[in-house]
Amino acid sequence: MDLSRFKKAPKNLDFKELVIFENDNYMVINKPPFVPSLDERTADRSISILKLARETYGDVQLCHRLDKETSGALVIAKNPEAYRNLAMQFEHREVQKEYHAVVNGLHDFDSISVFLPIAPLKDGTAVRIDKAKGKMAETIFFTIRKYTRHTLVKCIPITGRMHQIRVHLQCLKAPIVCDPTYGGEMVFLSDIKRKFNLKNDTEELPLMKRVALHAHTIKFRDLDGQVIEATAPYPNDFEVLVNQLEKFAR
Image (cartoon, rainbow, N blue to C red; front, side):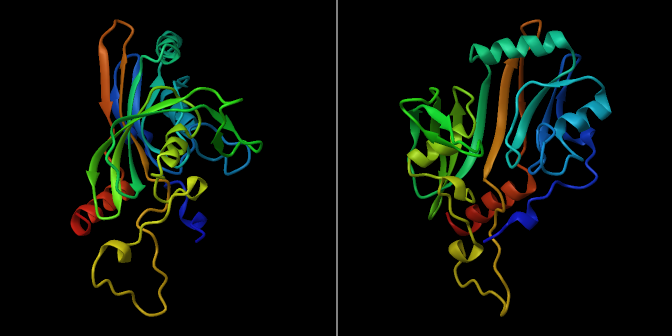
């Protein structure tokens, strides 16, 4: 199923409405899905988080990135000293991040660690496990809730490689739903709701039209050492998916 027609950035974004934390040095936003972190070279260049942030706040800098389809907590530095401060924390793996993902299958993850090296494919659009040439990556997984055929999972990345969570979950035979790149299947309401009737001549669409991955929480230190912790609420599409699973697949 081609879902590309649905994978469009929201229109008329008000950047200030995305901010979930702000002080003199940092802001944390709840990044919406389908908006790239940085300006893209090929696709529509009219919108990116960095462009929107600079239009509103001037010369600010993204401290890290999220994949285009991934929603959630993203930190922006307001000055060079703040950027260097957080860059050093990322380098020393002192930033704590928590992602939530809905995955295919039933899984009991109780601090399951995946410690496998990752290498990009030649076209740069995906990654694979490569024990010879890959860079070491580690993710820890916990089950939040199990449903009939799916599991809501908490993901703690220790390193920050491209597509790390997605490929590590694939290794656990728990691919993220709506992630065909790594084997994730779509979720349809007809899969989870009994006596579901679809109108004649109607195509059923999946409940999620993007990779079901959300950057839920981030925790780091400010310039004065004070701990900043910000939690990004689920966006509408992720919340709808979880609510439908809660309602029909418990």
